[in-house]
Image (cartoon, rainbow, N blue to C red; front, side, top):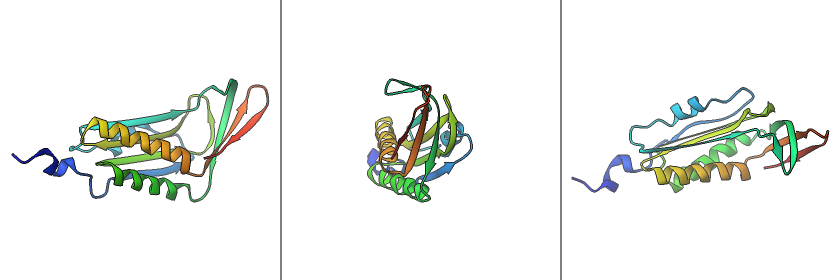
Length: 152
């Protein structure tokens, strides 16, 4: 029997990026989960970012996301970077733009790897890099009437 690291399923897929998108419509965890399905993956990690009802001690009523036209291309660049660092079998990332209410899904990312540890690490790198590098801006509206822009 060949060592595990010689098996093709232990390696990154040739084209692991299955879904990248910036959308004005509601996001689906099921869509991302289906997109990262891979028979060679022993671990699938998902991250779902939702609109919370507070930030920095203030009550949030709603928020809106807007983005630069390059946002989707930047998401793909980051996905490619993550896929190059980890043995990614499949990867997906979608981000919402427009007006969102408390509880709405703002971002959903998923990564499938041969093992759970790799999947967790790759998913964490993906969401962290997306949050820091993709030009998507959040406009929060607070209960006291104030508002704030938060940039990527």
